[in-house]
Amino acid sequence: MKKTYTINLSGKVFHIDEDAFEKLQDYLNTLKNHYIKEEDGTEIMYDIESRIAELFMQYQKENFRESIVLEDVEKAITTMGKPADIIDDEEEAEESKGKPTHKLYRDPDHMVLGGVASGLASYWGISMILIRICFILFSLYYGIFILVYIVLWTVIPKAKNSREKLEMKGKNINIPNIERSVKEEYQEIKISPIHRFFRRIGELISRFFGGIGKAIAFLFGLSVLLFGIVSLFTFISILFLPNLMPWAEAYEEATCMVSPFHLSILKICFFFLTVIPCLFIIFLALKILISFESNNRTILLPAGVIWLVCLFLLLIVGLSEAQNYTQRTIRTNTSTLLSPLSNKIVIDLKDRYNTGYNTNRYRSIFRVRDTKASFLVSPVKFSIYASKDVEEPQIFFNRSTNASDYLNAEDKGIQINWELKNDTLRMDNYFKIEGPWRGQELYIRILLPSHCKIEFTENVPRDLKFYYLEGQIKEY
Image (tube, rainbow, N blue to C red; front, side):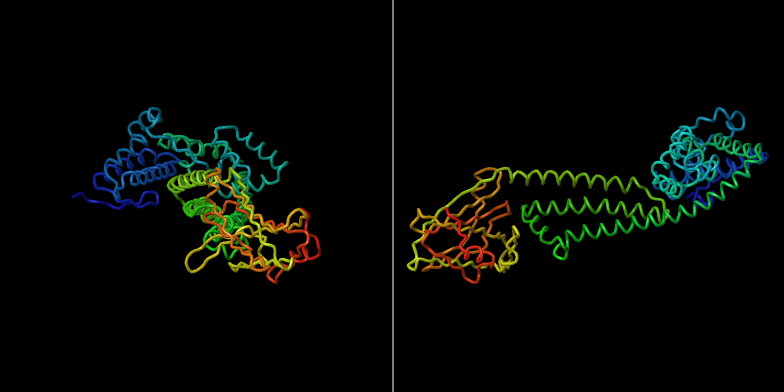
């Protein structure tokens, strides 16, 4: 069984096998002996160790290992460059294996305020002067770009060492490039003493605006977080607590329009289509408020797939339900009533389903629940006409509904109870609907002889009583 050591490499703790430890120690000692003679050798070694530590962490994730083995050390040496190649001919080791890492940082070496423009220029490989001109012009015309700059200043990290500066430029992080970056920075400061003075002023300005930027970013992140939380609870309440919300009536009518199976699918799709963006907003707000590292691809990829699948299902169900509204059919049934002996007829409306007709009759649909099941009811529309051409009272039932075709419309039963007893015509004020709501309407027209009088019971709404009692019965 191999012996294992625990080492600290650039502030990160690793468990490493004995043979791998010896190989790594020889490699680092060789490089230290080479760079110790140089003025900036300490910083070069620090960046080299940081890069090796980063590679070790990557190998552990890829291979699901807790310990560093000899193979990992050899791969890191190949990526960074072998000591013999670096010491004898550094140009041969410049192109190392591995894909360059390209990250966005603020450039502290060429910054005027916060290094945002120079960092973007290095990341995109374009002139930093062009970026600065764009920021200035847009800030003059659109003041919001000042806030954008401050937010970017706060969110984008500063390149603090040579490794991060190489990542900013998209170069391979190997020993020759690290050495070259450190030496260029050191020579720039050494050759231009006045540069230190202006850099110091820039750092003071950066700290001042950085503090303001952090405060603005905190308030912005807090606002986004509150918006995400409120939106999340709002959408969840729509699904699970609709009766407690102001839109309870609209929600009930909407749910009555689809079949129970489709309604279940729509609820699931609506849940994910609304909750996923809200959680994403909350996640972004937390990243602004609390800087933390996360594997965004692991989170966003499954969430994006679920969101797209739900959007696709929502469109499919929506198109399927829309087919039920392509045809509008109207059927009329006529019944002739026996003339009352007293030459008058009394209209009585029964609130069979206890819907509160006098106050709720302007709603299109209600769901009624009893001990056995639940069903839909809709208010009946009435009109009364007088005609000199009829001798017996007549009643017309106009039933209209939406459907995918005429045959299916026949099945959308509209049920209503009515009877004529003596001189009293009793009718339900609501009709029962079999199945989901498809815009069913029942329009009852009562045609009376001109000599026939009309009266209303107390169950008839007041506005209907006044309309007809004042003699405004329409002539047919």
